[in-house]
Length: 114
Length: 117
Image (cartoon, each protein chain N blue to C red):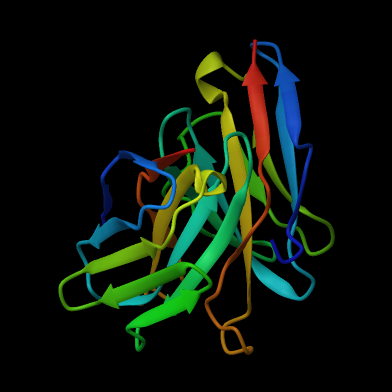
């Protein structure tokens, strides 16, 4: 059974710092991994999607890496800004079933202090 | 969010009433998923449906909850006799039929927030 964990649960940093969010999954047989952002009381915004054959994806100040064999992904945020404050969710899609049920981690709550 | 539409966005129900949440998937998508996010918790899978079929309902509570995805119209998540513990955000997602371009990429709606008073 796939389980996804995220460390840390919460993070508070001063504006301008670079930071790393961690995601671990127990079953390396994944189809893809996505990082989402969720603002309080809002829906999910997809940030980056990494296919299982890829090792990283970049979008602006965001870089996500994937190490399938070790069951880990990291989300790197460069030069953090107060507007980055949100909860970041990691989610994996499996391949062992005939469909791609997505399993989410519990999220990391990020607060960037001006 | 690539066009997954959920309504209502916010719903208030008294204990014992019924709640119906609707989800219109991205045009052309025939796979729909429902997730629930309880306060201070992550998103948990509830049910996966294809048109007129429930494929996996392993995450659905055994009682009071049901889901459908008819041939025509939106997918419906129905909660009968709501209790305060049902208060949560309910997210719908859709994906295209496997093999069509984006494959297993899933698109999420903006959620429906249910409050039971």
